[in-house]
Image (cartoon, rainbow over all chains, first blue to last red; front, top):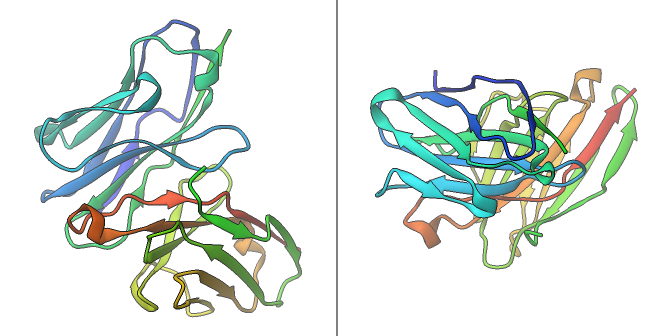
Length: 113
Length: 116
């Protein structure tokens, strides 16, 4: 069965630290990949997505992610986090002709000022 | 804001009751997907509606049912509520045709359901 795993459940960083959140999926065919963010008290918001082309995609608020097909990974990065990045981050995958978005469990990021 | 709205925002029901949750999709979107998000979990796909027809279903029992209307708004109905149905129910709208058949889903704020 297709699945998405996010390596870190809880991450705590200080402001200006660099961030990398891991995401791996299990599917050998064509995938479309997403990172969503959920700020406290707010709804899920699209951070960035990969459909095809350049495997390094840039999203909102300085986030980027790299699709590495050989590693089945789509890790999220930000060079310098801010307190306002405190949120829950979800990786999600559309795999093949499956019409459903498969989600990871999420990573809770807390950034200390 | 995505333009996707959901109502009500919060709801308390008792076991065995029935509930209807509503979703208005973003303008121009013809597809609505419903998800259940339990505390500390990622969203779980319930089903999707495209042009008023069910277009995919996750591992949820038949007591979870839905509708999509001609204006593309949607309802999620849950019968015979169980305690484990307590969760945040998310609606997402999308328009596959606008991105070559691949969907970017835009989420509403969710309805938080508590079953006592």
